[in-house]
Length: 170
Image 1 (cartoon, rainbow, N blue to C red):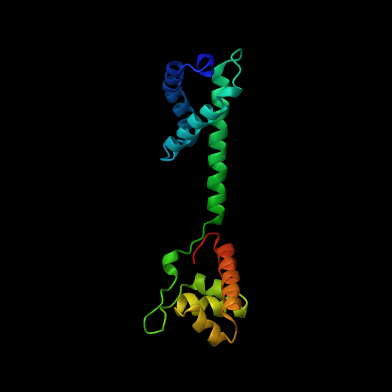
Image 2 (image 1 turned 60 degrees about the vertical axis):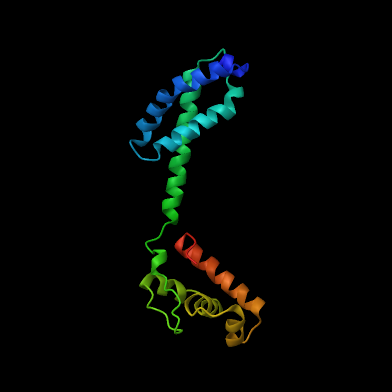
């Protein structure tokens, strides 16, 4: 590592080649054979590359690398927990597509509940634009408002639905 810090490209290549099985073992020991393990290993190698200037040659390399690998696994675990907290049982396929005849197919109970929780103006805007397939101008005329006001209502409705479902559905 000291030679790599001094700009020796061959030493740096050897270092990364020798560290790969070590880092892979640490990561797989913590996440198992999860398919994302290889991604985490790559993140560790990138972190080693970007932080190599912080390594002090008088200290052992192994604890420094082990700490970087552990932190990468912890970061991955946190990201996964946050993503799971935002996931919902409602699939985007549950949303009805506009029917050319102006009708829409029945919505799943989860989507119906979410729509019913919106304020009337927002629900009306979302339904007209996304379920009935009206243009902004047509929906604004039907709602008796301006296109800008209708867009704002729809945007607020979309945002509320994203907050309810934890991910973008509309």
